[in-house]
Length: 209
Image 1 (tube, rainbow, N blue to C red):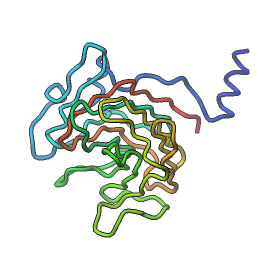
Image 2 (cartoon, rainbow, N blue to C red):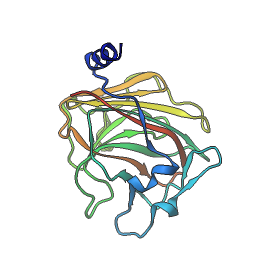
Image 3 (cartoon, helix red, strand yellow):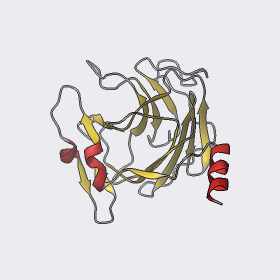
Image 4 (cartoon, rainbow, N blue to C red):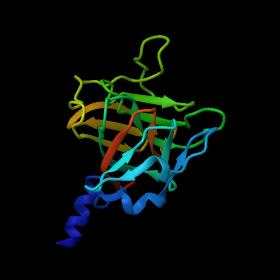
């Protein structure tokens, strides 16, 4: 029976059960990066009574795993703790930042009204065309109607990264899919752009190659 279950998991590309990636017990597995400023992870993150993590949203920067990850399914739940604003999940962080705020990576937007947009940052590329208006930050907009929940409610992002492809689902609605990513692995991060937010149930499931 166990052998059959393992074979079934491999056949569907699922190699392991989801495991926690970020919670109160795993803060030491992450670091806070804020170019040109001094701040610590403990200074921008607090643990709530329900076990969720509240982030101050500033100084501008990001938290990132110390470990590199590739070929995985990532689950993140987030909500705005005050007025909704801007933020994101960073995938395949490879280099930087040096003299700029953001590293080379792919950002899944959690920005209010833009949840599911996908931005290639600091030189990262994918095969599909950019759909953002001329003069705006380069992004591939979300494909379906806005599936973000009302401000203050918990949202779910389910992201699959595998073999140079990224698929983004927001609250059960597939919102983006790109191929030919210039990086297939890297660190995972959460981006701060000034707005407080909370996260919970941040889990990763490695996928079979």
